[in-house]
Image (cartoon, rainbow, N blue to C red; front, side, top):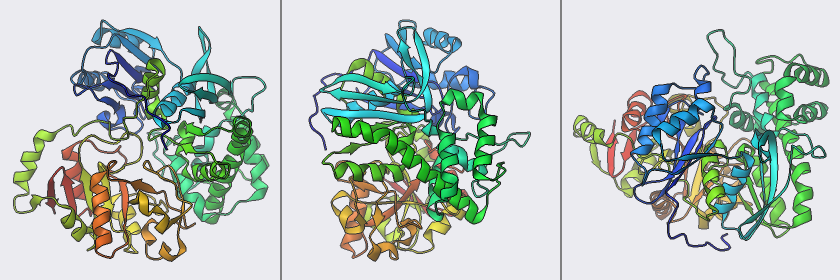
Length: 555
C-alpha cells in the first residue's frame, strides 16, 4: 500500500499534543524515543473519558486529582520536557494547569478536522491523496483568530503539501451532520442505556453508533422512513444542538411515529437501524463521490464516521473499481486527534501503528499473582494456547503496549475458536455481558483472507466488513453476522507475531485458520491496562485462561 516513507531520524520530542474532549489523548515522544498516544479513558477507567475540567460533573468527566495523576504519569514517560503544547478542546483553566506542569512550554491551539486529516494522511504512506474527515463536529480555524464547528472537511495532499478544499462551514456546502448516526439507538429498546440519577438516558451516547450498526443487519430498509431520516441528518451540529426538539418533532411527523426512548422493539427496531444505515451511506456517498470523481486520487478517510465498517467496505469497493485505494487509520476517532496535532505541526511522515498506547501499568503485581496461582501457571506457548481454544476455552491476552483506538488488535484481546456454534452467545452473555445481537470479529492471516472472505481488503485495524464465503458461514458461525459479513482483522508476521503464529498452528492442525477476537475489558469499562483488572475478569466471568506476556494462568 505504501508509496514511500520518508525516514525520520529523530522525532520532535519538544512537542506534546493533547485533545481534551471525549476520547481525550496525549501524544508525545517517550524515553525510548518512540511516539506514544496515551488515551485518557485507559488511565481514568471511564469509557470515552473527557479530560477538560469543564466536564467534571458529566457522566464521562473526571476530577482534578485524576487529571493531575495522568499528566504526572505522562511526565514520567517523557523523553524531555516539552517546549510546545499543541491543544484542542481545553478551557483557560486547563491550559493554565498545563503551564504549571510544563513551565517552558508555549501552548498553540489546533483544529479538529485538520488534525483528523493530517494524522491519517501522514501515516497512510500515500504520496498524493484526497483526504476527508466526517464526524459529529469539531472546532476548526475559519480565520487566523476564529474557529467554528464543522462536521466535515476535505483536503488534498500532494507530496506532503496540503490544500484545503471545502468543509461544512461554507454557505454553498451540503448541510449534513453524519455524526448523528448513533442517535437513532436512543429509540431502539434492544440497545442498553445507562441512565442518570433521574433516569435520563444520554440521547447522544457515544456507544450507540457501534451497537446500531450491528443491529442494522437484522432489519430491512423501510423506504417510507428514508426521506424523514435523511432530512434529520441535513443540519449542522450547531443547528442540531439549538433546535433539537424541533427536528425530533419533524422526524416523528415524517416517519409517522411518536418518537421517544425505546419506542421501537423487535422488527421495528431492527428496521430503524437498517434504514438509518442506508440513509447514512447514501448521504455520505452523495457527499464524497463528486469529489472523488473530480480529483481521481487515492482516498484517506478519518473522523468518527470512519469507524462505520459497512460504509468503509462499500467505499473501498467503489474505489477499487476505479483503480483507487482507501486508507483508514487505526484510530480515526477523536482518540487520534492529538496524533493529528503532532503530525500537522511537525509535517512528519510517521506511523507508530496501533500498539503505541499505555503500557501495563502494574507490572509489579505479576509476581503476586504468580504466587497466588501456584500450580495453575506455566510459561505460555502457541501450541498450548491453540490446545485450549480448540477445546472451546476462552482466553485473555495482555502483552506490551496497548492498542490505541476502540478495537482490540491482539495486545488486550479475548480470543477463542469461532468454529464452536454457541461461542458468540457464551461470550455475549457470560464474558462480555453485552447485547445478544452484537457481532464478533474474526482474525486471519493477510495472505489467507481470500480463502475465507469475499471482497476482502488488508484490514490490520478492523476497518472493513467483507462477506464470509458461503462455504465457511456454517463452520465459522460465531464470527459470521446475520447478514453474512464480518469485521475482519488481518495480520502478518511483522504486525502481530503471536496472532500470526496462533493462526499458523491452527492451519497446521487442519483447522480453519481463523480466530475470534474481541476487546479485553471489564463490563462498561474501556480496554484494560492493568494486571489487576485482567485477573478480575478471569475470576468473575467464564474466561478460562489468561496470558500475560510469557505466562499462562488457568482458573
